[in-house]
Image (cartoon, rainbow, N blue to C red; front, side):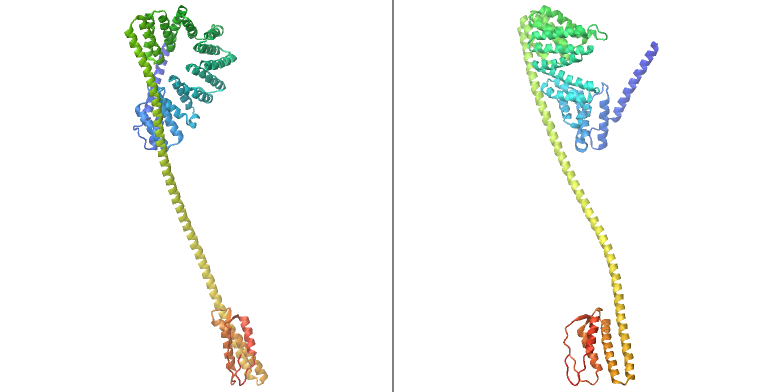
Length: 591
């Protein structure tokens, strides 16, 4: 059985190594060879690489300066060529770079705040992690004014997405609200607004009492009562502080101790911490012998639980007690322990207080030179912290100014790109419109030509038909004239047969009528106008022909006619009337 367990352990170990090597090979295969981004395919490959790098949870993985340059180039490319979502993704990779490298640095804080300005990013689950990091960064860097503004936003996001590494539900929404109250309590405690701190912790305590049904809630209640006691202790209200410290101990004693499945060691440590908080009041009241056993116990349990901040505060309390008991050697011993811990974990406030107490111990020993040296270190540290604070503010403003300049440059570049794109768009629209106009004109010209051809064909057909009709009409007039002449010739033959004068006169009169009608048809046949007859020409010709038929008569014929055009029916009627005029004998008759 043991052999089988060992074998399974080895197999799992090999699988883990293989998976790790597989992840490494995947990252290596995705890693771009160059940091410059000049093509969309280079941008997409870099994005895929960063996505895989962030998903990788191996502790040995870390971003390098090449990653930073690549990410910066990706950001520049995305701001000029990609969508807002791509810009957000690249900014998120940059945030990860600075967080992995510098944790709560000014640049990390700035990158986080920059991401949270995007409404689209606030709808993404990754925003919860950024809020979480920014909250820790503000707390660690003691930027409590900014933390005060951040907390409501942070817990609003927690209602949507749950805790930074979990999912949300209705219970966690309520938990988020209580988390906000708890954070406000600690925030006001850190900025020494103890009245507000007490207010929020009491709200939290009231809620915990209303839902207390499990030992974990009872534990949270005792923590809250301890926090209220610390707030009263900070406000120098020792009686109220003692009341709440005792209340916390009573909650533990009556609701937690004796239950199964609890961490007894840590619970005992927490009891020691509460007693140590009470011992602070004993130290202020110079009851050092009562406080010392309690401090020793909490020091031991804090070492077991590895709570460094409790160790530091306990060492300092012990050093302070022994200083007041005028035992500087023991006091310096505990201060040395503080300095050893501070080398590994930076704590400027504790370092300042410890250096000051160390100098006072040297004064108590009579080592004036050593005391002056420590006092100088103490003052230098205060000055350096002040300078660091000033430098930090300067760095923040410099970074902000630099980013604003870069943003302005990018805005200018974007404006130029937009203007160029607009000009290009207008040119393309102009060319398109010109092409459309040309195509329209071409289509119009083709249709015009087609219509012109159709009209010309129709005109040719009409002209041809008109010519044919004119020819036919002329032919009709010609035939009518010929038929009338034929009739006139027949009448002439009959005239020669008859000798009776009345019959001859009648036949001559009929011939004249026929000649007047035939003359009208003859003129229409010879003229281009087939509708109207010139009365001037018609009457002159008709008079001449009538006179020619009046042989032996001395008649002079003269006309004064206006150039009038009449249709054939009026012209023939007028000709018949003209023939009815009597001939004039031996005299000049003017008509």
